[in-house]
Length: 171
Image (tube, rainbow, N blue to C red; front, side, top):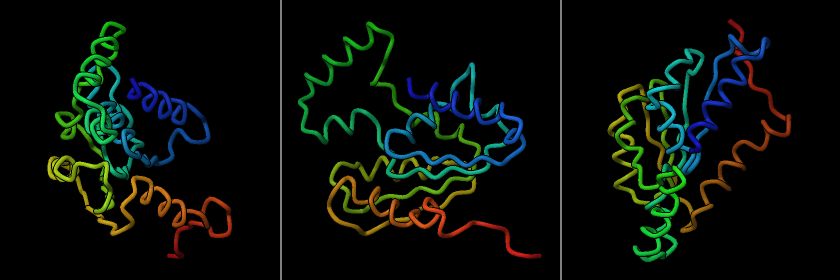
């Protein structure tokens, strides 16, 4: 139920006096993009309730079933695991794709074309079903799952270490 974690994080930030009016961007990586999509589609406590959400970056969106298959798990293990988890109220077979139209923030989708664990049809479907301002970025990186994450870290390093600042240009 990672969707609840996403909603809780946004609720916390927006409850802080110093950030309650600040624009918020979501960085949703891998199955985090799935969790964020579920959070937008949540009927009881949706991310749609937060007008501060202004953008989302979905990096290599993936769901549990594709992930488990990419690990080489046979179908009977995936089904057995899902059966046990369902008894505990967790359904990993849920598909986040029906909730894509619920996303309200402009979204950039990023995908390594050589990612061996991905399903490019799923990524393309995610992008095509977005009904907001959107763009797609294809990175041509090594044939490793973590290649895109490593590249993202390189791109963000100057900002995270404080050697570069992000500011508005003078008007």
